[in-house]
Image 1 (tube, rainbow, N blue to C red):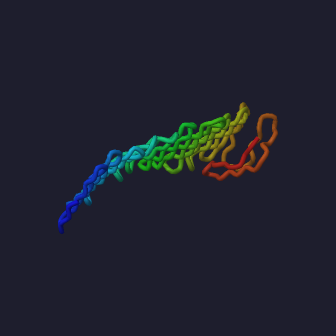
Image 2 (image 1 turned 135 degrees about the horizontal axis):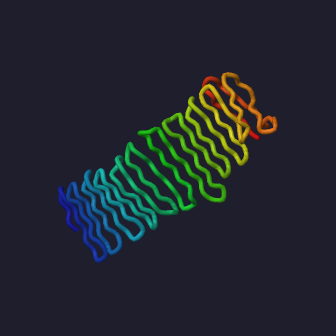
Image 3 (image 1 turned 90 degrees about the vertical axis):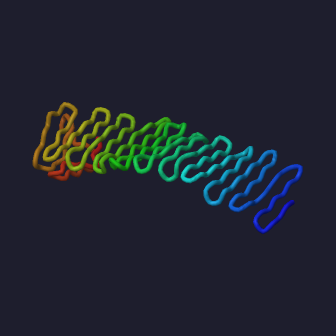
Length: 206
């Protein structure tokens, strides 16, 4: 062991350690540490690794890993998940089940997808646009210009000032908000709300 007002070191059969400001180091058969305060940090062991040289970082633990240039960009994976980001352009995360999420701030958009037995897709773009897809159900709209809904044999379309029902009804209504019948004159079950001249609708079901 050596000690002075400016430094300190220790040596044994199993490890070495010392401080010479601003540097600290430690070394053994399995572990290594090196710190140069405040610009560099490094830690290595069989279980995990960590390296920081701002703005760069790298971290690993078992099968988990993350690295990047904080806060500008980054990437991670492991544990059945993966993801990345580039600030402020996008953020992305996904897993092995088929679920994923995109966030894209420059175009005010997010995209969410669910996998598994009942896959679905939800998209919101330019703040006012929407897309939804679940099985046979599909809807998309852009407020206040139009809204479209399709579900099996039922189809409706609304646009600013007019709307049309389907399938095959050929009916077009303009200027008056009234429930839209299906072929054969049967009204859809559920509540329908139309807002003219916007032409949006909510809560209509077969």
